[in-house]
Image (cartoon, rainbow, N blue to C red):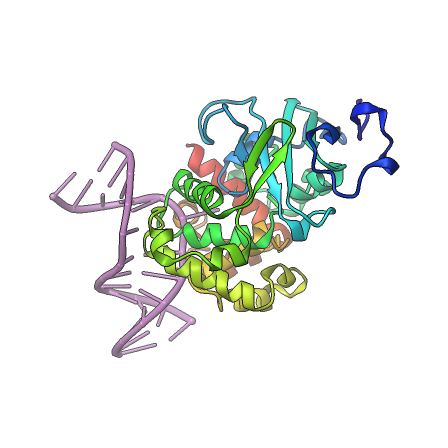
Length: 325
DNA sequence: TACCAGGAACGGG
DNA sequence: CCCGTTCATGGT
């Protein structure tokens, strides 16, 4: 096992400058993903199954959602969520099934574990779910998939953009937003574009956003960015109840039941949220006809009651399983 | 060409 | 609360 905070120049952690902005102070670490029996994390599945839109492949490794299975992924932790209080680029790769390697400008082991809920026991979660044939097949097929625990604002914007849009095109929009309105950050010899802050995105014009092919979602994104800039941050809803957060998220523009559930599940740690999209609707109609009630609220509530505390994990596996077939 | 893609705003029952 | 219509845009 490699040192979890390896440094250049033999410096110890205590001698690091406060603002570590130079490439020579890059740190690297290794994380085991095999707590007990077999690997319990699959980085490619976690990043490329369409649940997070906060990652991209490193330069020169193509776009997400193709066959490549050994990619290095990059995200930029927003200032408000980073221990250095400034946007922090983070590279992660999985050289073997049981090993995760990260690179960043700070000791990011805890951050990486947090970003994928790695401290949750996947076997324990599965044990809480009903052991029906569909869940069994989905978990056998998609084992290692983890829910993201992403920053709230980028997740909110991504799922406002998701309306009537394919997974690759949602991701394209987030890349375009970052490249156009976000701050450029440096890691080693490379530079990356962070997702824009609420204020940066609020300053964009509807016309400017339409140029990025956001279509009718452009004014939703701009107005929601204004609301977040002027009001409480959606991240604060992580400590609210499911019902309270669900209601308050819909005060933003372009946010209904489904987008609210996605933000709650992928950014606020509400793992009992069960987003019902066209794929899940189809799965329910085929395999769980008693849960499909037609209206969003009735269907989602029935699914939450059936799958329980970790209904969102079941949803993620069913979604990935359905889309893979 | 018509239809679909991780839906939501809007108006009306 | 529930339902029908409309809303950009690129792919098939």
